Picture: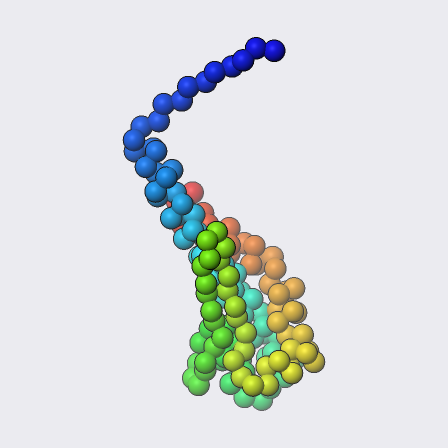
Length: 131
């Protein structure tokens, strides 16, 4: 076997893009994808709640994931930690955990929304990276 040496010359503009712009855009794309997936998940959890008639007021539904009406105090915490983006969504009412234990609303919403979540994440990545 022989050794193979390859030399690649990159312009300063290309080097700057890979070292400065690309990491920022990739982080933004990841954040946008996580947010979009979280909204789908919340939408599906809201729909499960409505379809099953779990509550007779809009307070629970309006507190899931993001504000959809008033009054609401949605549980929505987006955090960035290095190469990781996390989104904590839920229902910010005191009886939410008992509803989840009994009816698996968020688990069912996740199951129902999986395919759509994948699609919106891919769209957000392509859109953010101009692909």
